[in-house]
Image 1 (cartoon, rainbow, N blue to C red):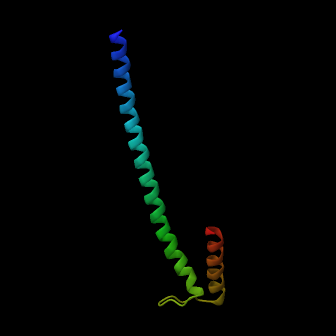
Image 2: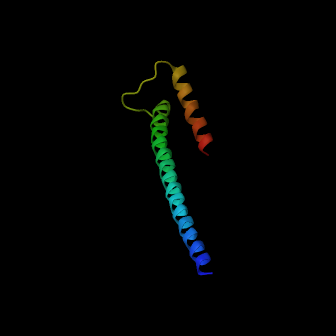
Image 3: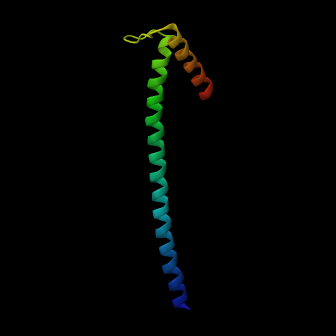
Length: 84
């Protein structure tokens, strides 16, 4: 009977070890996911600010035509609706 308990205990330790590795993998996946979202959000913020130059004046940014300015403004509006 002690042998059975030892086997159960030994297999239980292996299961705990595998669970710890799985938890570590899950944590790494969450960290990578959060980092990729944050880095993408930074790029989206830059693109949003550049497109918003059609509404708010920005130094060094000039649109070639009014058509480009209108498209940039529509881009800002659709982005706000998408985020909302």
